[in-house]
Image (cartoon, rainbow, N blue to C red; front, side):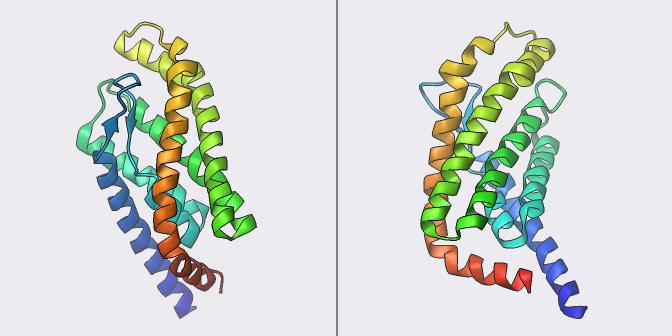
Length: 191
């Protein structure tokens, strides 16, 4: 019982720390020159993947949630409603969860590469659908923008694919160095 209690405290502290790192990474965002200026790349999903690998999928979801809450409190939203933060939260979840699911089946570096490709593709497709149905119409309604759904295929889909590839490359560079550590703590978690 005592060992389990310590592990829970360690998990909570780690999730808080990874959420803070994700929030800071979210502040370092940049546009890509060939895409509309409202699309930004940030690497804040990487700590969520690490949290998910070590502590399970709920930890990854919590990191995504906390970083977006922190960012909304600190920066607010142009619309008054956190549309962009909700979109970032959903994009993070649909990148992190498939990545974790596939990696938990394969458990190798090649498996992680396949998992990151799956996460990227699923994120790009799901976010394209959600942008067409919900997110872009919300911006049109709340900000008075013209209908931007025509940007889904030429801009949003390729942007999310490129963002996923960039995150995957950076994560793989970290994962190669951290794989033994992640596996060690994942084994302790399951004990």
